[in-house]
Length: 126
Image (cartoon, rainbow, N blue to C red; front, side, top):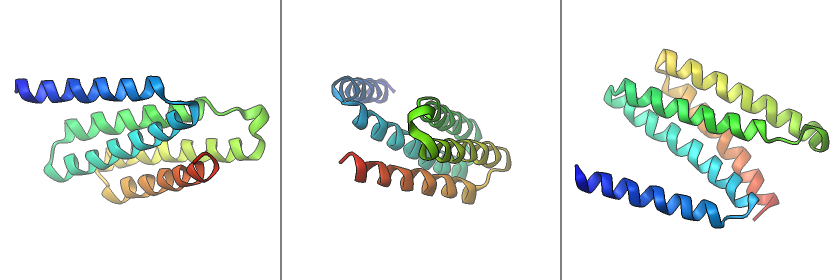
């Protein structure tokens, strides 16, 4: 137990250090990765029947996606920002539904959406 706490603390410290030294485009990539990771782990929790963990991880993924949406520049971003906002809202709604219905396919769908946006982001900001 102490070893697990130590490794979690180390990982958390490493992530905070990485975020502190990252530029804004890297931070966005980290947010995409964080959402994908939490959804992926929530799938494993669902498959194990750990519904509390599944719900917590999906909630964290929704929070990350909501943060991505909240920081879109709707004035300067034009249609791209509007389309991304719509996709993020859709992804959040699908995560709510997936959590309620324990639906792995919905979780996979959102992972695919976020991965596609992430890949496009990396094409713009390598």
